[in-house]
Image (cartoon, rainbow, N blue to C red; front, side, top):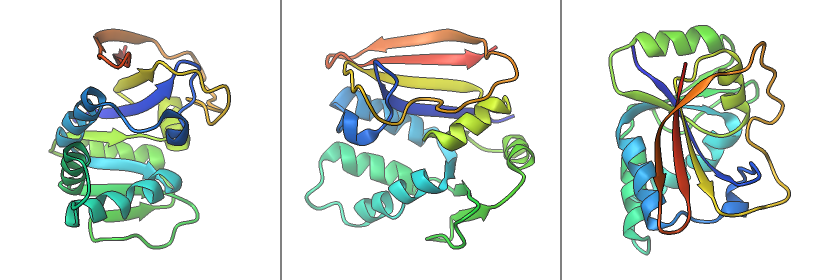
Length: 187
C-alpha cells in the first residue's frame, strides 16, 4: 500500500503562509525536491492546486531566469503522473494529468493508496486537515523555519479530531539555515 505524505513549511508559531516564510534555503529546497521525486501522485485542495498549477509546469517549460533549485523542483513536479484535486467549486483543470473530485475524499484516497506506484504527496491546510481527521496521512514532514510570523494561516487550522493523533518521530535534520525538518510516522 502506498503512503500519503503531508509535507509543509511552517514557522515556529505554526504559520504556513508561504508569503510569511519566503523562499527555501538550498538544503530545504533539495529536501522537497527529493520528496517530490519519490511521489507520483499529488492530492490538493483548490487553493493549493491553483498556487502550484500552472506556475510549476510553466517554470519546467521555460526555466530561463530561474535558479537551478527552482528548475529542479519544477521538473520533479512536472514528472508526477497524477494530480487529484478535491474541490466543491472548481469545474475544470489545467492539463491532462489533473482530475477534479467533488465528493468521496475518504474512498478516493483509499483507492489511490491501493494502486501500484510511488508515494502520494499532499500539502496546504484545509485538505491536509481533512485527511488527518480521516486518519489517511501516513507520514508528516514539517520543515520548521526559525521565524515567528505572529499572524497568518496556521497548521491544522480548524481540525476536529475524534481522538488525538499519536505520531512517532523517526527522523530529524538540522540545516545550516536553522530550518529543522521533522519526519513523523502515524502510529
